[in-house]
Image 1 (cartoon, rainbow, N blue to C red):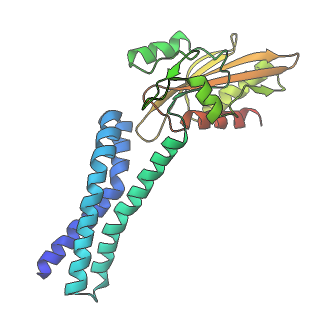
Image 2 (image 1 turned 30 degrees about the vertical axis):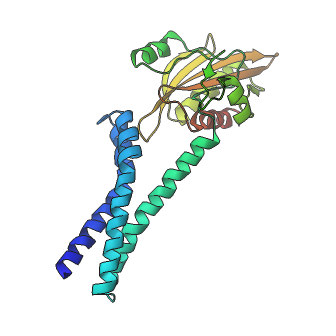
Image 3 (image 1 turned 90 degrees about the horizontal axis):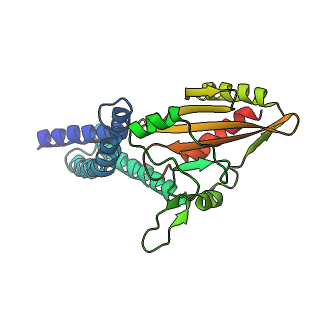
Length: 261
């Protein structure tokens, strides 16, 4: 019986470790091209990871019972059991937190500071997007399909409600200075510069997320605003997925904080 307890404790510990490292494995595997994001996020994270929680929790509960019955004074066994039970609980809390975030923001993936005249991506970005079968790049009139009988809604309306602070960026510097700040911000944020045209005031870049390697395209447009000022508009569009979990809006805020300082 003691051998059985030892085996259960070992399996419980292994299961707990897998619970902890599994989402990282799924995300990094997608990030570095071992599998696509659909498998990493959909299959490994959303389908298989919850199963591993229950396996770990079940083994942990069994290990706890065996430890209490056979050798309650041996704290190592009790500790392993607690870890095996606690790991899936923590994982479930993390999972639910992400789901809560998804429910708290609209399921959109295209955010811009100018919803009436959004910056339009050039051929440099569109060639990349078209080749990879990315989300459509149109904005004006774009609809978010309703669910469960709800009507379709304009993406611009959903953005305005969820992110009222995402507005054109007005700064008291010349367009040339605004362009310099923009390029510096792109470099500081670690985005991959795709195109840079000071003549038209257009800068384009791609940001790749650390987890799952999601690629989001960014275009920045710089225009004069009065004699010495500039208005900077930025648009951030995810290549894949329905909801960006607020990432595009936070990306725009990060960029804004750098160029207005």
